[in-house]
Image (tube, rainbow, N blue to C red; front, side, top):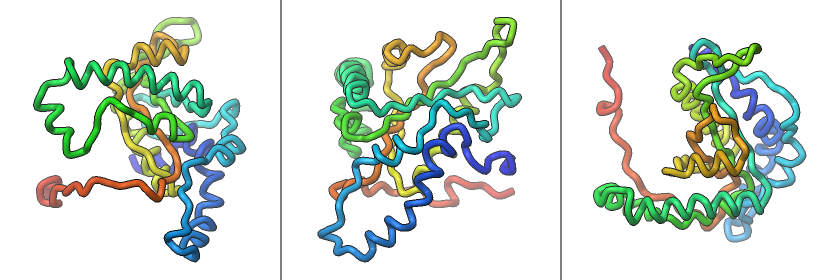
Length: 225
């Protein structure tokens, strides 16, 4: 399977390849600068606006069931649209935390210090909303089956996450509970699409902190037979 996944062409080639050309130089410059003088890199507008030709068609190379490629990546850079997305998500998330989510669920999230306030949706220069296509449409307008659509889109997201990290960018995987229908309507997505994941993308801030989470040892996640 791995020979099928050199890049995620549709998104990674459009968003990431031009950034690769400048990442090495930026890393070298940062190493030479005193740590106290290193500036946060929250804005990548210039790079992405110059390199994101969304009108250009690229063939995605992530594997998918029966090669149906059942994904749509909606890239949002407009500040007003990002803020409206934040409003929609915060409205639903407040209800989630206070009413919909079980008490144990909320308790399990305390170590991550999450709540319904999502300021990063405003500050991240780019939001990528990943939609799975539950089915497609044939040339005659009939429905086309998209086999294993959620698994296929999830694999594509994994490749995208790896490419973002390799390019020196950061993100956090978010799955806005109960926000899909409103976001789909706001972004004018067709009826055959459902929101799977939202990725805020940008360069890390020097004030950023990461929870000290312990990972399971290898013998608990891999079995060799």
